[in-house]
Image (cartoon, helix red, strand yellow):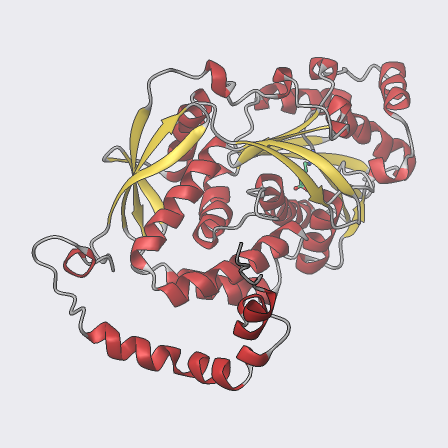
Length: 422
Ligand code: ARG
């Protein structure tokens, strides 16, 4: 028996070719590992294909529950969006894959793990850093980064060895899917001026073809985690799947992002993330009710940090652990229900309720029952504005630049045209 490699196997062209290439180049026995993270696929077919191409063993793991519990919900609680746009679907799935690749490699006594990433993307970083962190004794092989074949050469390589070529190859796009979203790259999309053609989308209806009647949904949260839809309790996987269908039907969750990759390239990325888009919006709406102004402000900064950690392949870092602890703690009263209207490409929060809400009607109202003592505002404002008043008198009023210069009284007098008697 030779040395073994565990290959992350999607069933696509590159990883299928990799099964054979690894054998030919490194003389290793290939075990494929395919993970179900919510990508619609017939996994029996994928498994059989791996064996047919020459894998000695083909493993399929349903990782959806793990993915939701340990990756998607924490990212939602953090409101993680890379560069304010990308909900990080692919980026969140890679550390889970790295972990399961490592577990499998250790169980199977493999010396290598392998993945099908090229040398230009973020995914290679996420896989490699994850594996190096979890099991530094394992070596990482990345065939597509090494072999230097063009797409046409890869196809020729496959044909020559009778490796089945996927029908999806007809699609001009490179696609990656999981519960949290779908990414679409390459082809005409590489021209940032070109509007994504309709055939780039598969999960969302075009907003102009979406139903003419809005739909209202109620999402129940417990400590920042969605637990029910329209009053019906649902497990996380089912809830996200249902939200993807519902919001997708209404054309919600299309994202067109000029993205800064970790490897220094700007790339044009199209995403469909119906469930993530609505859930992130609803979650933030509930936080607006239950967190203080200071918590909300600070949490926004942490969200940027966490999004970068996830994007940049640093999931297994102490920085992530520490910031996640803050996020978890911040969610203790983020419980309640958010009402969202889905209509023609937009999700709009139209209602919110929370048992520990900080919204206080008797303070906010302009109607009967107002408990806010308006006379107290006078003293408050005097002290609040004291430093501004003093500084303005001493420094700002004679300034020739800055906020007061345009209305400095001297200038105004000088510039005023004299009235002439006629
Ligand atoms: N740009 C996104 C990211 O870096 C999506 C990557 C999609 N990956 C893929 N192998 N097609 O997370």
